[in-house]
Image (cartoon, rainbow over all chains, first blue to last red; front, side, top):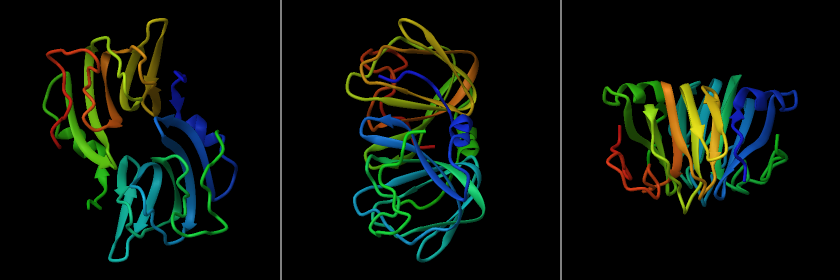
Length: 122
Length: 122
């Protein structure tokens, strides 16, 4: 039973230096709360089994879909429906809170060198 | 399929005036994302079937437990484990993003005049 509050800024400070990192910060039932920082171009992928939620804490996420792109800024969120192909990108970088069922790989249906299914606790 | 981003400030502006309001803003699988504003003393309750997550967007939530209290400020979150009795309170008011399975009543195991299980979309 974990009853401590979680400070998002404190958690982001514990991520390793670099343009891309993921850390697990909380669990709710069988869902994970992960923090992500990312700068660059991710890979096109989809999650065939589940929706996925991004809440942007800092910076801007450009979420590319096959027919358009959506800029998601700090204070905004987006739910990617299951099965929908998407590619996160960011020229300037973003920090986000990511919510999805535990064990969901970040690259969905695509196996990649950046695939992370179960990030470490931070 | 909803692919629009959601701006939290815009959504909070759509809540009715007053010390207490809840609105549904997104769904992820069978989970609800709700925005809540609250000032005052809520009722003691627990959710026997599910964990519940509060992400504080503005102000301070004082989460009372039977043996202590935890102050949760903007930029912080707390997961209330299923079955744990708790009472939200706030002297100055808070705005939060609440995440839990759909249909979970806000007063948990307690039927009250402030019980809301399925808030309106905002």
